Image (cartoon, rainbow, N blue to C red; front, side):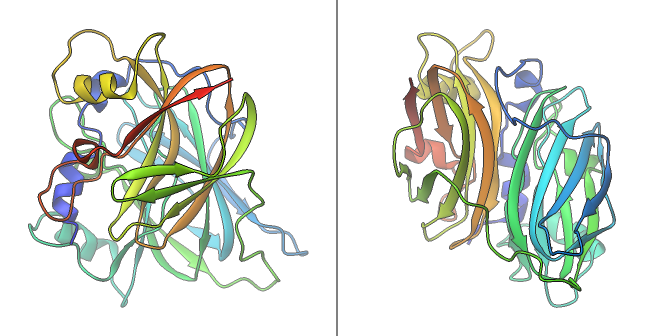
Length: 292
């Protein structure tokens, strides 16, 4: 089983160096500053603006249950993400903090339900999830150059998902391409093309996975980024992070919107393996794709 402590120390270990790059792409919708979600009387899906900074989140304390789109904007100086976890069995943020300090498997009451994946300073990412009522938290598992993960520096923000009084949508939005997460592969339902896409992400593997979308530098492959991330290559990063969907448990689903230009892109998973603790990229969970 995935170790919560291992995840906290392994996801995107190169974040401190990547943080200076500026993605050429990402969310087609730029969020405003932190604000409460909207849920119209007609049951429109909720939309939440989250500001990530060094080291915390500005986000509403309550979100209406159903389909929720998180728009995250990075106002910090380092790479940030907004991993969403659901805390079951009446557990609180204090229980989560204690669990993050302990070795061993992730407690059964911690559920990974996606969220916007990492982007560089000044950039935006987004992700849509279907959230049931209960206790949740945003976390950033990305570490600083000093090796300390952002959550350990205070980048943890609890929030409550409340029952909806209207017929809020309980289904993900219509998508035009699907990415299935497997042990250890990404399977696309069809090739990506230039333009705007709404991407469905499904974890069809037996253990948690994520998808990080990268725009590769000219002539580079996702393997180059993996080698660079593990310290095998020097110099500037050979790719730019464009978001994606953070960790999903087995059977989990989420979606994100992105606008792509012509070029080479990469998909990669940094989640540590439940058996040997190595990041899934070390097991071959990375793919180079051409757009256009």
